[in-house]
Amino acid sequence: MQLLTPKEMTETYIQGGPAKCSRSALELLLLSIMAGIFIGFSGATTNTAAFGFENANVVRMVCGLLFPFGLAMVLLMGAELFTGNTLLLMPLLSKKITVPQMLRNWGIVLLGNFFGALLVAAGCAFFGQLNQQNGALAVFTIRLAVNKCTMPVENAVVLGFLCNFLVTVGVLSGLSAKDVPGRIMGAYLPVMYFVTCAFEHSIANMYYISAGLFAAQNETYRAAAQTAGIALENLTWGSFFLGNLLPVTMGNILGGFAVGFILWMAYGRHAQ
Image 1 (tube, rainbow, N blue to C red):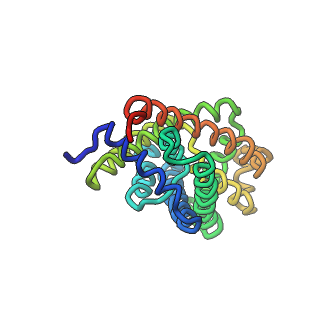
Image 2: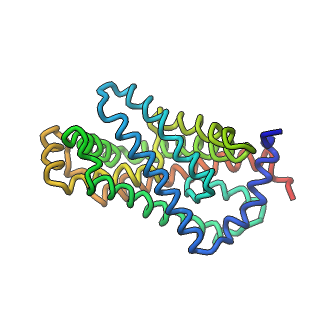
């Protein structure tokens, strides 16, 4: 068979938990920076492809079709992505790893993901990628960042939950395949759903919002955004971290835990 059964998939992830948590800090950091770069590329690609469309439904469809290849690259390259690593709940429940080991993994991976996404955002904002159509892409990027920073906290948590329910299903579906096309398609469909529905992904927002923050530092982009009626006073590093990243991350953790707990109860709790 070219596909693991759900039980085999769950047991494989549980057995792999100790290896994920025993990586050296340097290995984890490098692989998580790579994952942040891949997700940053996805964010840059979707913004670039969608900024010229006026219809919101078209924008969401374009983004949904393109963004999932970032997660596919993460899986194929063995990179470390925080949202996927919320599934470490399964080996934790099976007593294969400890809480400190899981939190160590999360802390290093979050830091690396942030740095990787920040690198892509800075490259796009400071080196001309956002100049397209006389800076229209920069205005689109700033508007998106402001919208994310002004989202009600409860919306951020719930949309983060829904997002990572799908992302972790995508991670496990991709890992269950034994060939490259299967891995890509397993990851593709659930991620396409979350992007099309505009759910909230913490690592993607590390690109989307930081790119908007960096773009707003350019006087030309800033003036164009103000002319477009964008409330730049709502776009700050504080609103990014406290208004979006923190609640979205909480929702992502809960969404990943939901998938992990369901699969562990159904297939993993009797695994040795």
